[in-house]
Amino acid sequence: MNKMSTTSDGAPPQRPLAQVKSFDAHIGLTPKLSIGTAEPESIYEARFTAKMQATRPGGLAPSAKPGGDCEVLLPLPPQLISLADLIVTVNGEPSENVFLRDGKLVWRGTLTGAGPTPMEFTYTAVGRGCIRWRSHPAASLTLFKPRSSRMVPMCECSRCRSSRQA
Image 1 (cartoon, rainbow, N blue to C red):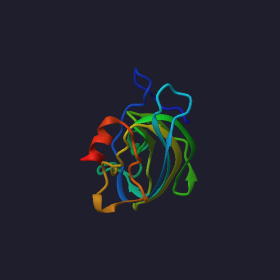
Image 2 (image 1 turned 90 degrees about the vertical axis):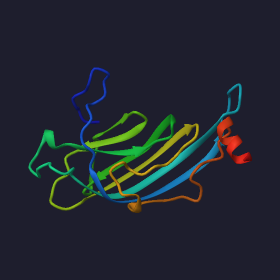
Image 3 (image 1 turned 135 degrees about the horizontal axis):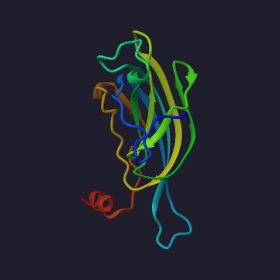
């Protein structure tokens, strides 16, 4: 990861969200049960691949440098156990400007050019708990197209069990 300025809690300060113009994701979830725990827990592996087009937030000049940084937020399992196989490309070039904040994977950088910038994200995450995939806060819901045969794994927490029985 590249060096970035951080706040007192160690996280980089927030920047404006990029404007996501298109977002096409494939999400593969594999439910599993934990091994070696006193009580079996519902865990799952999430394989996430997304292609998007994003632009700088309104009001940022194309020549802006540090002050022109923006962010793209991506979902992670609510109780993250591990994150692996992370690949991020921006305009076809690898990017290491990623970090975790508030349960999300965050990319930070400057989007250049007048038009949308192509971005690709791939990762595998293992987590537990109930997962709810939501669109990027700066994206129109009509542009958010997750593709998965199963959006929510069969979680065994009391809330999920009771909702299945209703």
